[in-house]
Length: 259
Picture: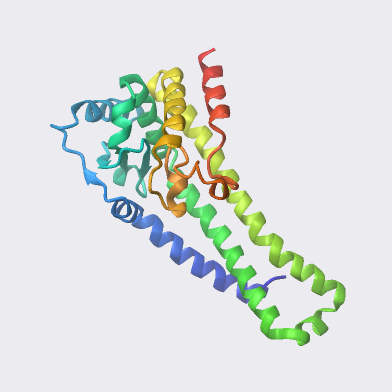
């Protein structure tokens, strides 16, 4: 309806190339954005000890470990597959979490790796991106096509066409956000099982949520979905369509696992 079969093919190819490039080089792109540095094992022995024990528990290869030199407390995992995985934490998270809580956070991130969530979100982003491009094509066609487009479609069809231009990208975005939230719940569950301690992750989420209100990470909206807690939580407009489920609900589900 928006761009025809040929328009759909063009939009999908463009979205596919953009997102597969981001997927293939995701680790290099995001690490460079946040000026992350490889963590020296001699300087962070506990961090490496936790990651190594969890990867052995999960049956995963040892990922690269990076540090973001920021006082804000957060963490993320990236990489196109388990063999190219990267686990990254801020220096701030190491200051506020105890061993069990840090283990829960890192288990959550390795849960994303084990579940191949980077690939899942890339597929979702490709489909959503194609729909948004189609809507943009149709919008410009309607502007420059003028009355000819409206006459060709008829009054009722023209209204439906305009509604589709507005609704289609919103619907695509909502589906993408729903998938992102479901992957966070799945990583929480996987992380709790890997760490053998749902309560450790639950306490960590509570601490990180409170810490994010005091010290915000200088994060890009395009990468906010990667972090364990939303780094844009203090921005009303940024959290209106959040990539993360509510922290209270995540903690509640973890506490139910304990029970």
